[in-house]
Length: 136
Image (cartoon, rainbow, N blue to C red; front, side, top):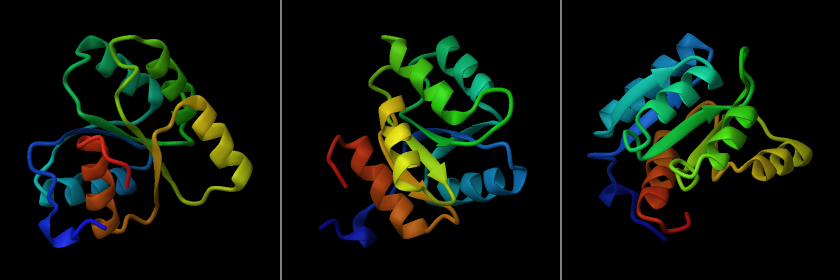
């Protein structure tokens, strides 16, 4: 078990994607308080455009599942099809996941799940584990 007091997100470059501006503000503030650098997008298409423009710009994506324009699962499938982005961890942000929704997200290529509302300690440990390539 990881000692959560020893974990921080300093230096982690995160793209946070959510269509709800309040959720996005909360995630952005929480990540910055933990030392991460955060950029934001409000739908999957914006996220995909940003990632494809500079594939090495981010270490990880926090992706809301349900969004207009392009939902998080469609965006994740597109990320997985791009060789320059295929290994990028995509963490699904979700308010609740039924077993069939979880299966669909995993099939789309989601790396892991982070529940809303965000628990800062859980987020810190989860993101750090994927940054280092270790399972949570």
